[in-house]
Image 1 (cartoon, protein in one colour):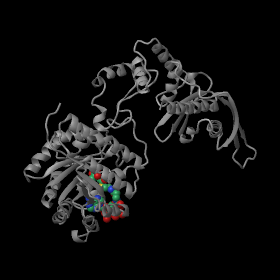
Image 2 (cartoon, helix red, strand yellow; image 1 turned 90 degrees about the horizontal axis):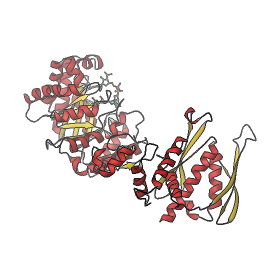
Image 3 (cartoon, protein in one colour; image 1 turned 135 degrees about the vertical axis):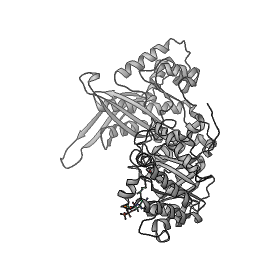
Image 4 (cartoon, protein in one colour; image 1 turned 180 degrees about the vertical axis):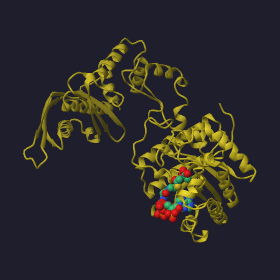
Length: 532
Ligand SMILES: CC(=O)SCCNC(=O)CCNC(=O)[C@H](O)C(C)(C)COP(=O)(O)OP(=O)(O)OC[C@H]1O[C@@H](n2cnc3c(N)ncnc32)[C@H](O)[C@@H]1OP(=O)(O)O
Ligand SMILES: CC(=O)C(=O)O
């Protein structure tokens, strides 16, 4: 239910804190591409990096200045000055100014032990460097923010001192005090009373300074903490796309933004473009060359994937029954999965998607479900191999054409010298429309050789097969539950210029299982062309 229409700032730090995540590495070009997408999405502030820390970041700030952003303001990040330097000679503060951004944020210490033990300075000196670093930057920049590092831990340990650091930041000219849960240990119930106290304190010092929050996810509470902070009245939420960030990550903006917009009634720049969220989330993982998390709320591939028959049946009647929001709102889409947990509704949904007409009372329906469940019991799995199941469904309905007829194959691996890889060859026999073909081909391995031989045999009849390629090949050993033989399941993903599709094979023999999946893949491509 919409409760208010308060404006809230969305501040993205994927390009800074996100890059502090293990294995998250992106180039300057990637950073520029992400910044442009965040701008199109309507994020208010984009933290580009720490200009004092590395050449990639400096290049980013040089180049982003030449790009005309429509909505977002770029922020340069850094720390308070070093105790030994005066602000005007501190390299870090100078680098922040050289970045020539409309906004700067610096972090300082709120927790007394960080001043005394990490910086090795007195509590008084810490207050001084916070205030004079900000005061030095203030005249040079449109927006000046202060990241109160470890604020929640500092507040719990020494409330009076943590609040003094906030007072120093306000005295230095910060317009936002961003309360950081740097170690990510704070739990949602702790957020409202602390924010209430800080708001009262800040209100006693300034009428214009607002609060922000920057939660980390070490207790798996970063999103919840951000939402608690929003409902406690902060003006700015900081997080990253997909929650990438140091250690367990930052607050995930792909969960926070839809919650703010659709569930809490907040207004923000992203509201208008929120259907780009799914694409933006995928762009970030793609450029970082990381797998996208299927189970991510809102933007994961599985976020609106329905498997249980009961769910599918109800969703078809009214999606609200098992979907908390409409997937299209964030650019995602509903998916119906095929598995041994499917019922009639799953099959009817898929049939419709594949252009197959089956009436809900068609007596073939129970037979299709039975076939699906029996095959899954034998080790086949159709969630990632829907093309194989479409072929089965068409066969049961008498709608499947035989494009070729296989008579046999042989695969040999000849390890003729111990210091050389084996020579692998496949020979196959098949016929197309009564024409017999007997072909051989070599390959890097047995499956590659088999694939090459099948295509060599078929391509002169079906040149369209040139368009397709195998993009993924997965083998899984199916253990005890399927009997004493070690069965394997092979999943193949193929693609052409238009789409990708998955097929499956199961056998105690890996070559046989691969052959089944290969044949399905080729048959699916031929059927697809014919459907056109
Ligand atoms: C909570 C956060 O996420 S903060 C952001 C963390 N991100 C990063 O650290 C990534 C980028 N960092 C870097 O490239 C490097 O650490 C640099 C360039 C910033 C600094 O490198 P170095 O000068 O070699 O120092 P080092 O990495 O050991 O950091 C410790 C120094 O930073 C100083 N420092 C740490 N926090 C602050 C602060 N808020 N204000 C002033 N100085 C600080 C410490 O006092 C210490 O200096 P000292 O040894 O003279 O006492
Ligand atoms: C500033 C920051 O990244 C933190 O305190 O977590």
